Structures are given as structure tokens and as C-alpha cells.
Length: 329
Image (cartoon, rainbow, N blue to C red; front, top):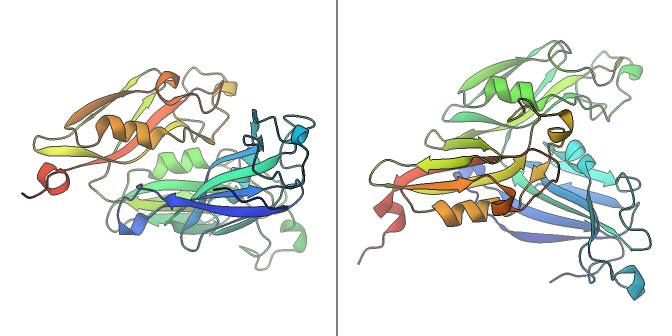
């Protein structure tokens, strides 16, 4: 049940079943900020922030409606994405955003709008490397899965020793292409190293001393991944005597390099695209089966980001049927 507030309220949603093991517990949160110009706060007691969706508009007549005339709350078909939230908060333990001007435009004049951010807290490892150094990532038991990566600067303290103030002032410095090369170099490996330099990453703020910040987690060795581009069929299969167990799934786009061959820039530029029903649909079609097929299509998942070419990425494991799906008589 929603509770109205003049500024902001936080709604704890549920503990998701996206549990890879006890080290990768993921919880979901939804934060709604009523007034444009108020501060929206995201935080994780443990782990780091991973924004799944951020919108500005109105999709309910009840939320943020106290003291507002009906004419300002009746339009519930008003919503635009706010990618700045993901850009500024992903990979951090705490994040505060002034919502003034955070959205690129007003999606519905005359309607009283609010910001809604859905995010999860992932138990991730953190690596920070100053410019010119090497970032070493390692999983003692499992395989690396990159969560976020940025080459730039988001505070004045990190990698600041001996640096003049002029090289530390820009704290909104984000490399537009950091995630793709880090993911390509490290995903699926037990260890990897990445050089923190503008020869690999685009220099997002000339004259500012930068650093490479990466958050990642270690997938247990038994976790498998499967990816297909939009309009293709994702086939999952387990060995005889075992059954599919879905850990996570997303139909959308989270980087600009996957499934990008031959695609115009406009179709791959949006990298915060998540179909919120992905996990449920894939689990309903595959959980407990020896094999299954899921079509990566808007007709199956709906379209989470119109005009973007999407893909379906699934993490799953094969478990003993009797151990997980049978009960003793």
C-alpha cells in the first residue's frame, strides 16, 4: 500500500529469488520522490547499488497526491526514463541525487509528477585503480561477472594524493564506454587485469585526474549463462537427471557492445534497459524442466525500451531433480 508524502518515501518491496548463493543475496527497493528539486537517496546496507529502472512522471493517481487537485493527478499514462540515476548511482553504496532538472524534459505539462527508482543491492567486490595503474580482479571460487565500471571521477577524495585542486573538481566525470571493455576482458574468467588509462577508455574530462572504479561479483562455478539477440530463441538444457534452476534473467540492454553488429547507434545507445517481468517469465517457462526454449521478443516480455535492439541474458544452473524438486513421501 502506498503512503503519500510531501517529499520522499521509501518502499521496501521484497527479497527477490535472485539468489546465486549466500554471498550474492540481492534485495529490491523502490524509492519515490514527490517534489522536483527534492533529494532522492539510495543506499545499500551491504553490497552496491544497481539501478534497474528510473522514471519521471505519473502512473498512479494515489501516489504523491495529498493536497493536489484531481486535474493534476488524473493523467496516469505519463512516464519517461531518467538514465542519469543509473549513471550516477550504479556501483555505489550510497547515492544522493538532487532531482531538480534530473529529467531531460517534462513528459506531461499540468500533471504533478514524481521520480520513481527501482534498484537492487548486490553483494559485490569493489576495485579502484588510479590512472596509469592496473586493476586486478580475482575470484577464488567462481567466475567474474562485471556489475559496473567507470573511468572518471565521482568524488574529490579518491586518488587525490599530491594532486592539485584543479584536477579534482569535476566529480561528475563518467566514461561513456567503460563497461564494455572491462566486461569483455573479465567476464567468465577467474582472474583478469585492466589498465586504467585513456588509451583504453574515452577521456570523459580532460585535465581531471581519473581513476577506474569497478564493482563485480563471483558467480559460482556451477552457474551457467545463456544469451541470444532479439528475435532469436534462447535454448536451455541440462544433463539427464537434472533440472533447470533460473537465478536471474533480463530482456533488454545493459551495454552497447552485445548484439550490436550492423545496428545503428540509436538502437544500442540505451544501456539501462530492463524488462521487469524477465525473471518471472523465464522461470515460468523453464524452472524444473530438463530443457526449455524462450523467444527473445517484445511479444513475450513486452518492450522495456522502444527503439532499442535488445537481447535476453539468463543465468541458470542444473540441479538434481530429487534434491530440488522432489519431496520425500
